[in-house]
Image 1 (cartoon, rainbow, N blue to C red):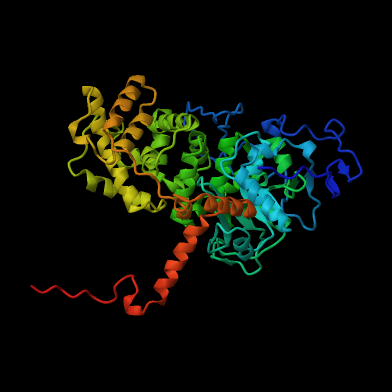
Image 2 (image 1 turned 45 degrees about the horizontal axis):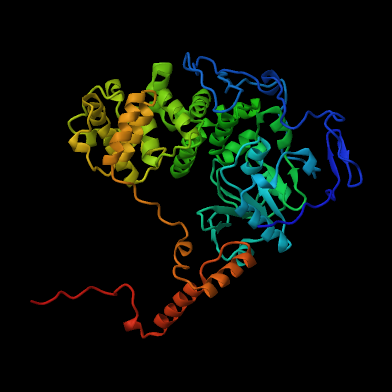
Length: 564
């Protein structure tokens, strides 16, 4: 697929620091300005973050040293405190008036279209061809500037959701608080497209300040200012191939700092989940958390209890799947945020220190995730909840048999977990099955054969995943796990997320295929099989024209019992 050739220079004035250029001026080099080369070096930690510790509280377990994967800078195990006053006032991220953005031309940044997902490029160029702004936004721009491969690509535009539905036929509009579009592709990829928005004047909040309703459209600058942290507020313009910065994210990327855009106390009260996101990005990038942001997390940590338990579960799973769970949970302990989510686990970690099996499992999980392994939700939750549900340390290593009434034993400990993490009943039952089978798998390894009680169990594959992470350092065990997997039923394939792509085109003739390809190239996104949809529409119309008593569907009323 061919894309338009690159455009010329940016037709905009750019003012930021000592860099002042216009369209006719040549782009200055960083040697000519007071700015360092993009993301080449970082200032010292003393220049970036203050190190503080709350009085009378021991934060870091002794002897724990955890380093984020693939990052040379270690995650600082710095203690935290909340001093009464700061000698250095915080930088006001929210501007008092119009602020001129920093615009990096193509020659001043490292983002290339070859590193952007092809489906995301299709969406960007499709929006641009209709005359709308089309920006790559959020973490995708951040990861591309850091020379990382983004996990997903989000698009921002000034097109309204109703217009998105017409531009992209293979899209759906979702969301309650704010309507966004999901553009679906046959390979399962989903590109999220959202309209630029701003802080609403009629925002509905709780007494604590948590947002319940906020839905007003705005400009790109207003959209950037309402995001959580500065390094996530960067935009990439597909027309000029430039990076647009309204919030100082480029400066913080160079300084390797995590900083909120708005005042951190206001930001965390507005959405307490942002505190978890700050910890996540610090763990994944190895950046320092800015001092006022760090202090605000400690002061507002209790606000996390007011968040939706389903959201807290979703955010926790993101960190377990991100390959940096060990430094993430270490940072959560340092800010005492984990005390508000899982107090029982935090108490065990502070009492046992680095010898607690939780740290060994998180490091093993990070290594396996970096190798490309993926794990189900029950397996991930079992890794962090096993010591919470089984409080006796002898259960943690499989040395002791399960309690007589093990299901009731687990249920009694689950009540505390359910207060902050909302887990579905299906996943709850599977977690219990995984943890109950842990002792049997240890016995199987001791006897060098899989116990008959575990053969063909539907949860055997996930139980073996848990065992592999728990004893990842034992090569003999990993070999035994590979042999035992042949006795585990194959996991069911995932349900197609957009079924229309999995129907169609079977047995289609050459004319139908040519029509399909023409429509796909016309809309720049893959389209479903036209004849199949026409047949489905015709059959639906025939059913609709039938008398009501002859229409297929759910039978109304109770069925009569057959006589005799």
